[in-house]
Length: 263
Figure (cartoon, rainbow, N blue to C red):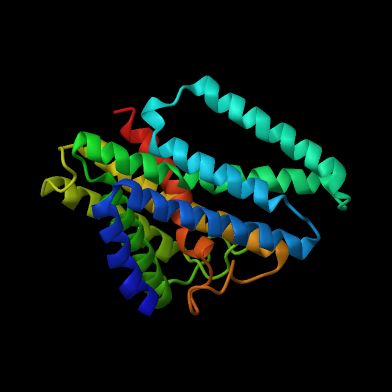
């Protein structure tokens, strides 16, 4: 409870501040979440190149922050350079399972900083366009998670994805999706989003945060179950790790950013 009470207002305050403060916070989150992801893999005797992952995380965070000024070919050059570096380092590391080590190194980068880092770009876009999509994104994820937990615990019977997440129910998942959509509709109707969207566009935002956001939870559960652990870490006092708290945003954030740039 303490994490929710302090974390949600604190997170919204950082969104309000925006700029380099918010970008720096998300970058720190990405670094620690990547550390947790890499640490999970070591349960299966896989040793990703952590320092390379962290360096690329810093670069990705910076690119997202200045992204209107970045040319796509430059990004490809950076990526190619780091791939070559990773291959050479692995050759001389003398670690078992080099294929898995390299695969895990880059999967972690693609899964966490490349996806979650889109929150930085979304917040910068809010500043330029006068929108409040980052606020709405975080609020809707929180509402979705809360509704899914409350309804699932009280009325949930049928499991929705027992192989991956045995505690999640159909009722809880449906409640989370519905509440996320309702929240987006309410925020749009009161003018909170900064500009008025068509109803089906708002519903799509709700489906992204309430549906695909929960999918992010299932994906992280899959990674944890594969290595036989319950939580990604212990830093949040009984609430698991950073990756456990941001798993929904990892999937929802880039989809909100992409959709916002196509309408």
